[in-house]
Length: 107
Image 1 (spheres, rainbow, N blue to C red):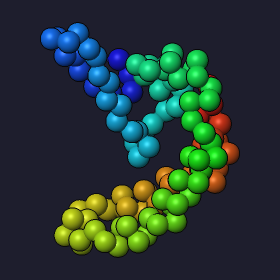
Image 2: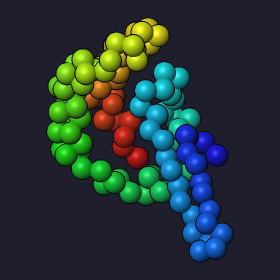
Image 3: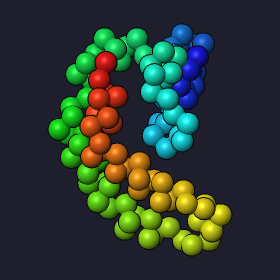
Image 4: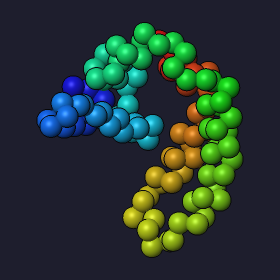
């Protein structure tokens, strides 16, 4: 099983729940490997309109614009061992301006 997911099965109700942890900040993330190995890859590839780009772009731009304010609220003692991780968060959110970002979301 690929991606970063957990599959939980409730045996009494015979139901399955999938938790898919976002890999946006994974430095070694490989979109092609993700497409091949992720448990939901087949589903995503059949649903080209799974997300609304206009809405996603609006929300991501809002998050990127507020990143500094959010990070300023984090107590310094929580980040003293983070190195440049917080700067990398801002850089990842800035990827919305890169056409590759949106291309990689397409089936």
